[in-house]
Length: 256
Image (cartoon, rainbow, N blue to C red; front, top):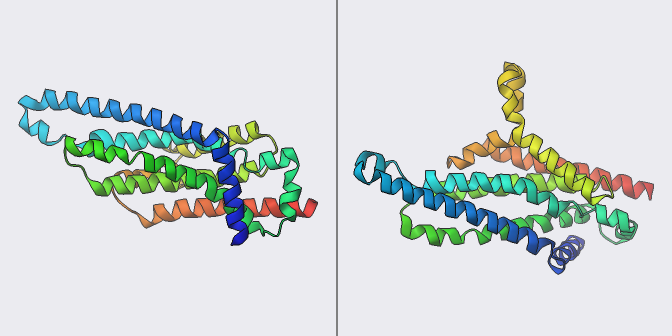
């Protein structure tokens, strides 16, 4: 555990000493803030148009007009930003030659991998925590479903942790940060878009594709429903790629 904490602190220092974390967090908040402003503006326009139609006005709420679209936009933004957090974790160590030094430290593979996984996950949590200020802004605008808000954020964090685990593994396979980032983004995009092909791949293949689709798994969270199978999928997804990272580190240690 001491070794895990040491690796975690080292990676967090690397994130915040360099401009990487600040740039990623700033980009995320600027884009999300724009979408939030756009959604709130749309709510205002719809509310004005519905002023003469009480029945239509009753159907308008913050949850459907602001929260769900905002979280959906967050998930897309993270497809682009998470690879920026993970691409250098092992690639930089390999390129600079410090990977051999890291493997000689009195730290087991679990501490190395989990320390490098938890650092970008912590940055993701900081990013999500910063968006909680939207709650204060939305409060005067009307009521919203807090359950949907909480489950949507939980879904985003689980999705983000899955992509982080995948990015950590990909980073452990190459010494080129650009290649690691590009492959991580491509893989995340594939898992995101794969459900689009389910309609023309046949019933059996379509069912399998929907089971591994990030978009399909995230949908229940956006509806405010916590499905055990969806939570288990994200946990299993992360565990698989972390296990593959363990194996990659073991191979590196064996070759060294």
